[in-house]
Length: 86
Image (cartoon, rainbow, N blue to C red; front, side, top):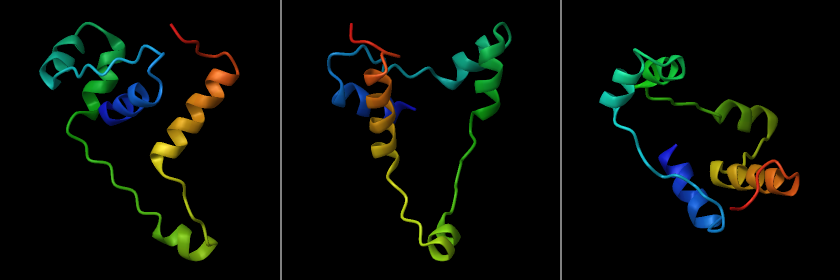
């Protein structure tokens, strides 16, 4: 998420994008009192690894980069007035 926030802050300087990172300790503490933090707390320390080799081979699929996908999503949200500049 931090990498995504940095990318968005760089690509969209007219928009307010927070790049603050909350420590795992604070998330664990807040999880005792706030339900949304309980979900985040379960994700601490997890390493996600996905392999798309089979999809590329069988389907001839050429995936787009995560950066390109995020930028396209934000552009759509701007064009649809879902988010607006500050």
